[in-house]
Image (cartoon, rainbow, N blue to C red; front, side, top):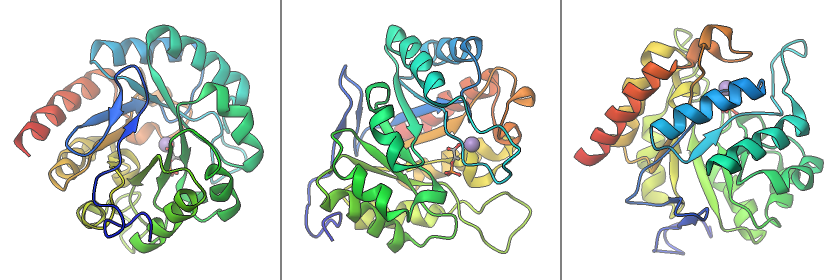
Length: 265
Ligand code: PEP
Ligand code: MN
């Protein structure tokens, strides 16, 4: 595989411009709400990120929801508003693309396209993202193996887009005490197998607010090149994933501990 270390020994560096780089040996934090909800919410999260020296904001405007009656996102208008506010603040955007037709529509307003766990094996979407000149982060499939994640990355890479990130976000196992089972093994194994940066998503990985921090710290020791997590001013009022979302106080605490942990590595 082209994404294998056998083919390329030097690690892939994702340069987003303005000094924001995701690479092996560095440590990037991406944080934000599960869903983009309102101008007020965006402004508050941006303020929180600026206070903590974070340069990449996550958030969904197209949300893959298990129930069609749940909030499904603000769509392109939400993204346009978010982009304007983020740009003014010098913040980069990572957001989920769910289908091929959204790629072009979202292009002017996004810095990293996220492929969600439900689309890891949407091969048409991956083919099209292979033709785009913006970075793509591919999340591991809900019941996907490490090798399947690497094969999904291969679609995009072989299509011509080499600016790729991989994300471990937990997998479905027989365990029901947590939302997913965070596979820390995958982080260690991926770091050995591929030259692509590996990102950890402890929020979806465990799905329970109180356990997000320990899993984030453990994933750093396992070798993650970055962490993506969910934060909101009032998680209990969040439109989605509130149960795994940190408030700003918890978020600041975790950011400081993650940076200390990275120094220990
Ligand atoms: C998300 O990042 O909010 C999300 C839907 O993630 P996943 O695709 O990993 O479930
Ligand atoms: Mn979420």
